[in-house]
Length: 299
Image 1 (cartoon, rainbow, N blue to C red):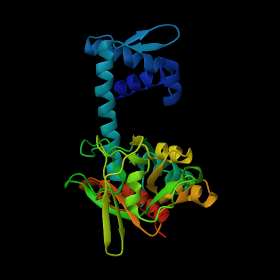
Image 2: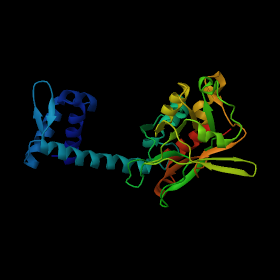
Image 3: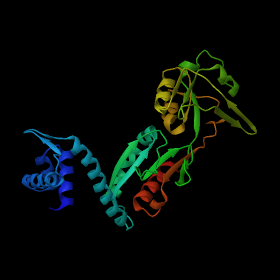
Image 4: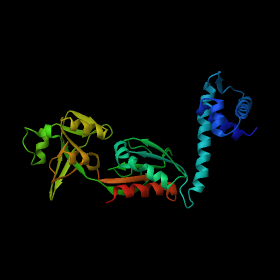
């Protein structure tokens, strides 16, 4: 028995939820898939799959074996791709982690063009605003906003920069005194982004004058678009990235306040960073996506 082939047949059967579907995906006869999975179970001395006329399901032993087998096959694919990935064209799977709204608004509309340029590349994308750890090898590349690399073992490459704007809806601002100085923010409902389990003060600068304000308000969230929607609803003032609210400001749905002040939450920077492990420095996959992102965020 070809153990590797049997393992591939087993994993394909689980993924396709049936022998026939797995056979179609692999381009082989269903009997070939069934025979190799049966031989694998015989060699292991354990039943991996519960079989019925409609579908298959994993046994307890099968679930454990599937996780290990999937990891082995993924590692083999990655080993093959790591060699090919040093060629002229990027090939293989590129595993990405993108900030939720930045990925949806800035990157996603252009992914079709990127994939057309690199047809041998397959993207596997997670969307998260958390600072995910790349050290476990789950991702090849992570795009992060504001903060630099959270670990010295990671390569941090700046792709571009962005501004943060203080914005509120016309309805919220109506009937209130005009904002002419940041100290007035302490009297307003401020919609704050949550970093980890805590917030950060808002820092504003104009020329030589710098302020750090512990603002307060009815909402704190780790999702920037939730803050944007709440600001649109007239519930307060939000400090948000320009790429997130630029269209709302242009359309008059939101208005900038204190626009002559530079704003940021705490010591967070204004950089858009690509993070990856040092062993990916020569990766055509990683470099291709970095170049693509740079083209989107640089003037």
